Image 1 (spheres, rainbow, N blue to C red):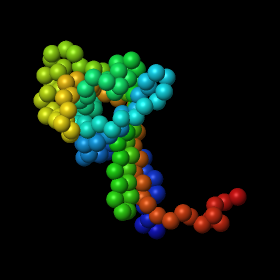
Image 2 (cartoon, rainbow, N blue to C red):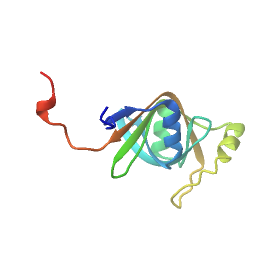
Image 3 (cartoon, rainbow, N blue to C red):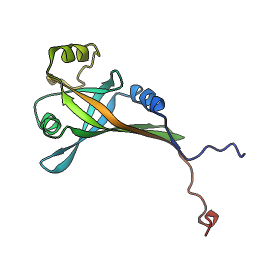
Image 4 (tube, rainbow, N blue to C red):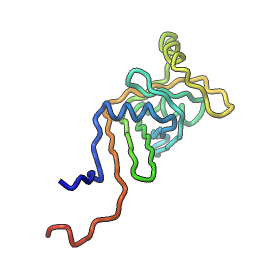
Length: 144
């Protein structure tokens, strides 16, 4: 055993949720008018879901018209990085109990705009990878 770490490691669901909780900025990917759209959003996790706020507009429209979404978060430092992707269902919260629960998360907008709508992403699939940075292996080291 050389003690070297594998360059790519698949993460467990628990590791993915721990990493999701460690950051506040993610990317919502949805479909608007037949075209993929991506939106940066600040978010929190709540009961193994992702919660974000939005105003009226394209992001909300894309969520309402196409509840199947992707949500991606990542981070890195000088030695490595990680990425977590959620494939799931997005729902604009309308029931007062759901909104009250979302308000307990203390999710505040980052910019001085009014964001009155809460959207909750419930995962259907969660996947994550951790990456160790390093040089490309010698091409001669591949068999065949």
